[in-house]
Amino acid sequence: MQVSDDDISRLVDTFYGRVRQDPELGPIFEKAIGGRWPAHLANMKDFWSSVVNMSGRYKGRPLPPHARLPIAPMHFERWLALWNETTDSVLPPATAAIFREKAARIAESFQLALFYRLPGGTPRA
Image: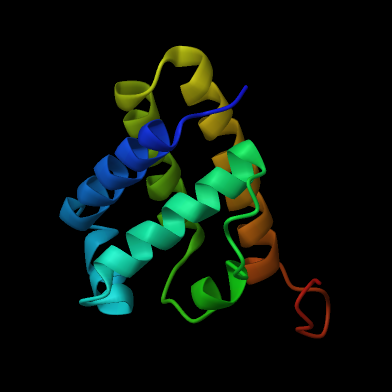
């Protein structure tokens, strides 16, 4: 299923508007992004277009910036809860389900990379 750029834009704008107001996530994002919100939102729209539509618009590496943040597994839980609420309120049910599934996989992958360590402290690659 192809998702329109308008739907992706509305989802990303709504979600990050909620993130910025969230007492747990807002301060983390504000400190990391600061005054670069327009660029971040454009980047996230390209990211989700690439994830869902395989558009190839996103050219970055999403994990390294997250590795520098003061985050814990609980932040991923909150992020996913807010993401799921937003997808359900902004998108048709079938489209929302696609975004929820992709986000859950990405969050799991990030958490394994960021928090799971092999014996001896070596990060799992």
